[in-house]
Structure formats: structure tokens, C-alpha cells
Amino acid sequence: MNATTPPDIQTIGIVGVGKLGSALGQVAAAAGFKILTTSRPGPMREAIISTVLPTATVVDYEELASLADVVIFAIPNTQVANFDLSKVRGTIIDATNPWEATGTDSAESVTTADLAKRFPGAHIAKTLNHVSYEELLSDYRTPEEIAEGAPRRAIAVMSTDPAALEAARATVEAFGFEPVPVDVSVGKRFRPDGDLFGVWLSADQMRQAVEE
Image (cartoon, rainbow, N blue to C red; front, side, top):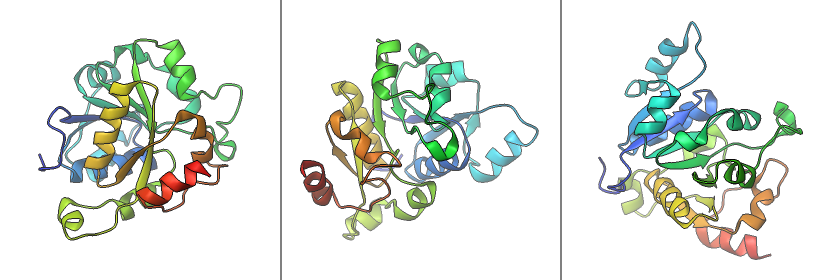
């Protein structure tokens, strides 16, 4: 584990290994985490994962949910509620977005608040949803780069659950970004149709932006 990796978060589970999930897995692996992944079965699934995420272990959802300290959902937004989030023993990071361009901005789309109501015992935070997979790979910083003063990109972290908020904050920081806790009331501004989606901001700039 890297020196900056939270000691109580050792294993990251990633549900979905498309472009976003693969990018998150690469960033998590670079941060020193153990990676578990799960996705829909397919003839090339294991080959793709072994190529892009060679240190990841492919497991079923039930095993991932029981073993991972943090579980990141990187699948279409409308599919998240199909999973039993009550099985996740750790913190859930919802990195999805209702997005018209991908057909997931519909009556079936769900918000983090919807998920919290449906699974009241789950610890859920919203983060890593306003940065593209290309930017995740290009903008994360290694501990060495941070020590040398490299600027870190701010990532908004939202939750009404204090434990989930702290776990998500620690995860984002370990990933090499600067976490900025923001109120859930400004969440829409970080969606694809919001003014803060895809915008590179420092932590101070983000705090100022959400107050405007």
C-alpha cells in the first residue's frame, strides 16, 4: 500500500469495467489498492480485464460486496438499483449520472437520495461522477507528484451519511485528487448538463463556485 492510502480502506470493488470502470480501476491500482471487479459475462470479459487491469480479481457481485471496503458503481445509472446494495458491507460510491446522451436520463434513472431511501442501511456517497474517464487517467497525481507541488484537480464528494462522506473523501484523496465535500443540494451542477461538469478546478475554486 502507498503511504497515502487509508489504512481502513484496502480493497476497492468496481462494478462495471467499461471505459469509466477501467479508468477508475487503473487509478485505484496506481494508488496501491487491491482491486475486485465484476461485470456482465461476455466472451472477452476476462481477457479485457486482464489486459487493462492485470492486478484485478474478477468475482461475482456477492463476493465483491462482502469483501470490498469501498464499492464503486461505474455502470449506466438506470442499472444501479438492480443490485442489492444492502449486501455491501463497506461504503458505496455512486459514480453514475442520469444522462440523456446515453439513454439513462429517464423515468428509470435514480439519484443517490433514491438509493438511500430504497436501501436505508447502506452507506452511499456521490463522487467521481463529474470527470470523464480520460480526465481520470490524465489528471490523477501520484504521491511523488503531490510532494513536488503538482496541482491537484478537485473532486466533489457528496453524502448525507457522515461515515460514507469520510470514506469517499479518503478514497478520492488516495486516488490523487483533492476531495471537496459539498452539499447534496448542489449535486445537479455536477451532472452532464450542469455548469461544473468536466471543469478543471482547484479545491479553492470549487468551494467558491458552489457558493455562487
